[in-house]
Structure formats: C-alpha cells, structure tokens
Image (cartoon, rainbow, N blue to C red; front, side, top):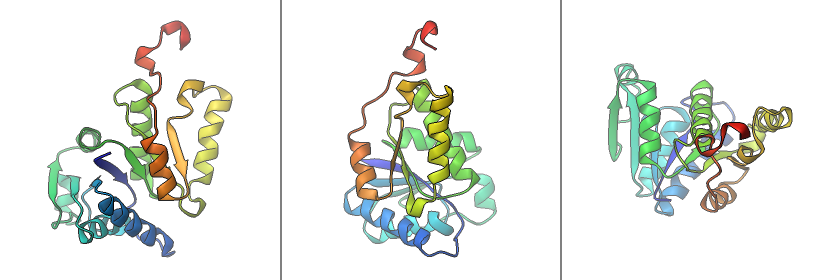
Length: 193
C-alpha cells in the first residue's frame, strides 16, 4: 500500500486519546512510507493526522471542496491540496488516489465516507481494503450494527468480511495488507442476489 485514504473528524473531542491516536496514525504511516490522502482540513483529527505525517517526512494529499476552502479550514502546508466542487468528487478522488481506506473516529462526514467506501467495494467499484480503527471502543455499536445487517440478511455472507476492524493500527494495517478482494455484486448472477 503506497497511499491510504484516512477518514476522520474535523472536531477535537475533549478526551485527548482521539487527537493522540490521529497523530500516531499520521506519524506511523509516514514512517512506513505510506502516503496520506485525506480531507484537506487543518482542524481536529484531520489536522492532527496531516501535521504529524508531514512532521515525520510523509506525503500528505488533501482533497477539499471549494466551500470548505471558502470557510478557511483548508490546510495550506500539504504536499498537494486538490480543490474540488462537490463531496462526490472528493470521495471519488480519495478512491482514485489511494490503495485503501483507514477510518478513525469522526462524525457524519466520516460515516458518509466509510459507508460509501464499503458500498463501492460491495458493488465492485473498487477492490481496496476498508479498515476501521476502533479507538477505545468508539465504533463498538457500529460494529454490532454491521454484524446485525448480516444476521438479518441485508449484508450477504460474501460481503460481511469487507469491513476490517482492529483496535490497534498495526493490527489493522496487517489485516488490510492481507485483504483478498471479495465477490462483488457486479460479478454475481441475479439468482445469487
């Protein structure tokens, strides 16, 4: 994996574990020679990932919509900053420029990015690993919900392994490196759907 899209919040929660985790992710990816593709912001976890990766000598590519540039939240010290018109263009650029997706804690924007990466993998728009870093159990309920989708039958058995989860970055990166592409919906027969 040469580059990973890192999805995370632009907020700074009061518990310092979230910022510390974001800094560790940026630094670790840079130290491993893995470039960061992220939302292009300077605030919250996003800014912490970018700043720590840059400080460790890493490549950091930001993808940000013009509306957020206008709101003055863009990070101006990146390796590259791509300004796009829409959120859809932003997510397409994440997919095009990365070899996989790492999701840190975040809010609705992070959830949107996570679910789209999962959905696109399931359909067959990409065959890249989608990882969820479950920092201090932040995603426990989401992981349970994901399992529930499979139990009920809304997530096919062959797609239940798309989401890779670990509480530690080293474990998550190992799972992502070992990821085997799944049988996508576009390769299935209608009778199997």
